[in-house]
Image 1 (cartoon, rainbow over the protein chains, first blue to last red):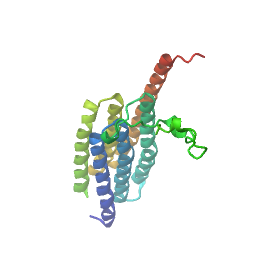
Image 2 (tube, one colour):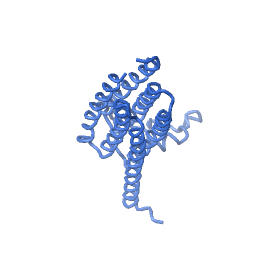
Image 3 (cartoon, helix red, strand yellow):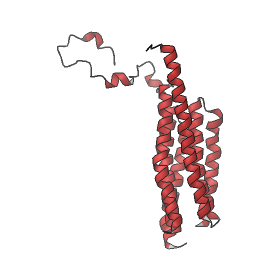
Image 4 (cartoon, rainbow over the protein chains, first blue to last red):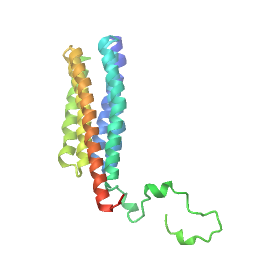
Length: 133
Length: 98
């Protein structure tokens, strides 16, 4: 092994670890959105680390330029594609997983989060909305 | 280093086989699409690794670039199509006349 291979080895091993985490998250997590969370970040980071490790392994010649092109492309497109897919799933009204401890609580939707908070600091006469959390 | 890269290629092949479980039994269409996109990214890495294992990385890296582009276009096209489909369905159900 050349000295640059000793630089490449930690990158490749860390990338393999993150790819493993991504596959485990894709299999084990309970609903689509958490699976998209696992794949969108962990798999991107793992791919980038493996490809950067290959750049150090090969040295800085033309093929490394191609590898850096793949690095830039994967870093831009992989989260973008998964974001597009997740937005389509959210608009299609896919069910969101809730922890069994919290079943029965209302899950706030996007409109309620964007709305200003219910007037708790005003005169306090608006108790008819106090039950809504 | 070739041994390490070969081991990583075998490891990624195992990960592809494991991810294929989600393609087969994914409860929704979106889960299957997500797993297909993940397998595409694994395949890009596998192509690059095979190029370095066979000491002939130039052609295989061109293949990897092409595969990354096609993977991205495929996932985004199907996601936008599904988005359009669900929007037209909700328009038909909600009946917002214009």
